[in-house]
Length: 329
Image 1 (cartoon, one colour):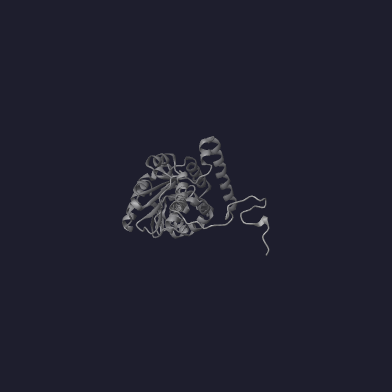
Image 2 (cartoon, one colour; image 1 turned 90 degrees about the vertical axis):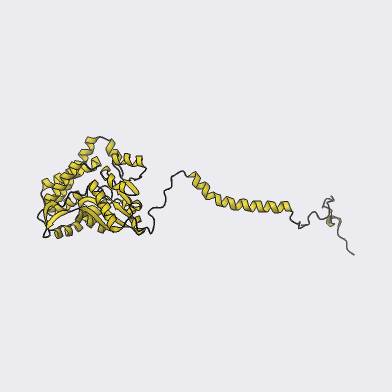
């Protein structure tokens, strides 16, 4: 009968050292109450840590989080957007005037006046009532005697030539968010309602509130119906439209760059200062209004050498006039 060698006997190491029998044998030990408690505690801690991780990450991010807005499906809400320097860089009337000049509606001296008005608007960054009145009178004198349908047709072409590329993408996205939420979006501007309607249509917005120029038999008389839709008049237009549409103004939003539109902004529950002038910026901060600024380089112009900025703007305006004159030939 064969016997295992001494080196392979249970309880003995190759060197002859004795170990307790069963040292290398795995035994299944029953769980004690303490081990069960430890396991349950570990599982609970694991679940708790996964739940708290997102909250901890949010706590580390001290950026204020705005509530979701606009509210999807809230049809009692609408959005009202100023046009000049809010939706579009510069003044819509100036761009429209450039297009009319190209179509021989007026002379070079009129274009120079429009250019200077645009330069003033861009450098000042705000709407001066006297300046806006001058712009209005210039536009009325130019369209007097022309047919409304004629200017509407030309306005479509002028939008593509001079305005489409000047729409602020950021503001456009804000308007689209309201549309995607199922809400109506209106332009509210001192520009002629025909021009504003064309812009609203091309941007896919609901419509436009604008200054109404008098026409008889489809021909402009060179006069206004009432006054320009400016300042308090904008607020009255929004109030009237909200009543007609059954809107809750506390659910509505308004967007503007100018302190002149504080009456309109104050009407709604969600006012936004977009590319704000200094007065509106101050007012918005004092009242906790939301701010958005899509401009680039404007601050440098404002704090730099004013004379250099004016010379550059004048040179740009002159170059544009020369280019238009060459095309005319």
